[in-house]
Image (cartoon, rainbow, N blue to C red; front, side):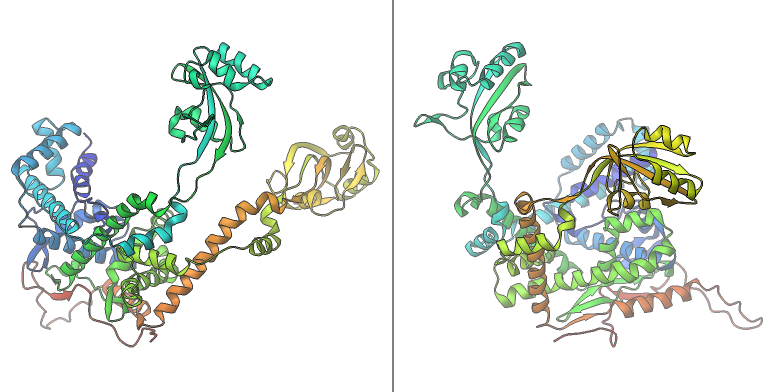
Length: 634
């Protein structure tokens, strides 16, 4: 097994073990943390030693965190690494009383070795060594992760049960997505051969009674004339798509206006379905949806319990720096009603952002840092402010929502927009204001003649009255290219020629087609011959209103939800301290990057702090609140 793969397998296992419901959402980047192996002390987290090797392991196992070790992003990533390692220590300590049977650990080890072709002892030992483990330390660490999993499950099990008010509000806010399955009233004919099915399909298309054909020929449901559902008052009961084989169901449920499918092969048989009536999905009643709603709210309450548990673990966290290279600053980046939001939470969100990861792959870290400081970080801070405010809004407004901070914020947005409707007048106004969105682009068949001399091109355009465009243009000195079928905006023509063909309204009739104006084409001159022109048109409102309505509803709900949150935030004091935090970071990183000044000969040297000596600094987990730079509202 490849060494790198082996390391990822061993360390990636821990992330899997920690997934309890949505626990992983609160425990980012835990894979590969805290092997417990000996190494150079870097930190003490509530008295527990964390080694340089532990921290470096986190960096090397995460592509984003490993992309910069210096500069502003290097400083950001170091903050996240320390914070997540500290969280791992807190989780281990909080779960140390959980009993994990040795047999469970042994079974997990055996499963890992077998599934990853590490049953050979030498390969197993080498893989462990590559990941910084011995067999004993790996089992010990695995046991600690299983203990964390057990403790997290206990926290979730102790979460309160959903109240009726929570269930009913969840249903109200999500009823549009709590839908019944679409159904069809339909009959089928099933045969053993395609030839027979083709013959029967021809009869059905010719007007023969489908039920009678099915009764006489179908291998299934022939006693009820091929009806998919039991007959009720002589008519088939509607059925969901699961009543048919997957290929057959897909074809039948595509017939929303009713009709006959083609012959469809499935499982060695051949099917024809006649859809008599299509019944679209509709919102379920509260009673019909209650089971789904209860499961969803229960999961939210479990997430809320886990988040509160972790918040409690972090509350009095102290990190002591032993190795100055791992000293970090983690001040509050915002304050919401007295609650500090640590800078590490902002950076963790940034590291998990897919666009940020993609940006790092395309540009050097030093180039990315100013962009994220200007655009991404301010956006994330505002999101975090709203998330931290969400539980307070829920409490003060007595809104029966449940979940983590992020889930509560989503719920509040839905609550603030629950009464939004879209009228026919709204749809019409949107249609009239956005007609370009509903445009059928122009189409034509185009040939392009390119002349070296402008006067030649002008003369040809003037003289051409029809006939063989290619032959006549070539005779006049042009190079002719057949562009074929062209759609406005498809870039088959250069921009100027495209406008001349589709937008200028200056085409000159010429035989069976028309010719465009002469267009400057980078020092050469083009004339287009256009046939089969179909002018651009706007789709009628009746054809697009079903697309407009949900799009407009989504926009209006987003605006209403945002306005509701903004109004609630005005009632509490918030501070955005990002500008000061970034300014302080910039100064600190710049100072650290300066070369050390040589000591003057004869002067006393300042002794360095040994790596295993007295801790250099003590940093509270959420930092000391900054002053004088935030903006607040009250």
